[in-house]
Image (cartoon, rainbow, N blue to C red; front, top):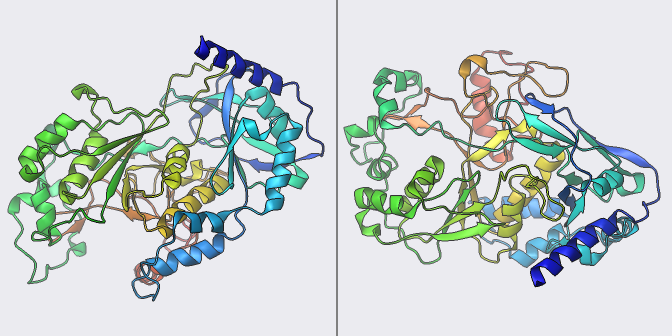
Length: 490
């Protein structure tokens, strides 16, 4: 009975929002995008379909936080390792009080009071659940159901939205509106036994010009490491055979999306074969917004298994955490239970930024083409990553599997075109860009992997980080003059 009453009250609240008076002031376009290739309109959502709207307020002191990040992350800086606390970070990213007041007035004019939304701890994000018809009124736009021609996935999005002109300086981003990204697991590094048999050793090898002689002090490497990578191989290849990790003061996390589950029984089998002393140990499971960790072996995810088993196997006895963030429910909009139309990282970032002691190293094997992510959202997401970095959290991301092409799994149909309606030839970087991004090597001495291609790099949204200037500058200068002119952001 109580659950029924709460549901009825929620329905009444959502219905009452539609009766509120609109806010005064003329609207002006805030953001317009072209839908990425493969997305087509597939209908109109019900006006009562609910959407979880996230409103990002400006962070006027973000440059100060960024400066802290570079200082505490630079081994040569006197402040190296002097990480900020959660509260110190929140004080640096807090919006101006005027922005909070103006946004509150706008929401109140639409019948949305402080009881009806949630603020982030720093008050730089406002999250509210409202019906589509009210979102359309507030943003002077029309939402559509969009369908991906390749995957069949449906989402509710628009290609543009507007805000009252006086709000433009007080709101940086509103999503989900123009966000079409489909974050995917990077799987190309996984080779099953039958696949390996079909690929010759020659096919695995990259260009010999990239090889380097190992230092004489490096420990011997088993010949089998040229074809099969085990924990022992990694310890030999990276010369930490005798290193003994300690649990005290250390922690590691793995993120899981897209119904990728980390199976504990499978982990124990891996430990029995690769790290017997870890047998019986496991990881801490954290459910974010209802994320599951199905323990049926048939449901175990290959990406989650790879990430969890190798990361926690190498790091043992350092405590590990596996985050499972809910995603991809069927498209069945309900009046009070919204479809999962949030951005891929939003829920996880909300959770981990709120946590006082997140893992000190967190690895993510998911991403998408940068041009499918609106720049405003990309910048705010990376600003959230910077907050974690300033607190001492190292974030590792895969660099991609498709080289400078799009994420089409078939190399024969890769495309390198802009998404601005002009279809200009352009290398396509992966998102996110401004984090530690990990590529791939093969063999010993190591060579750049050539069976698949790491991401294109060179973000079109972000300048090259200062710490990359020397290495990347030398690489670019070694290329034939003008060979890729206009194809990337140098």
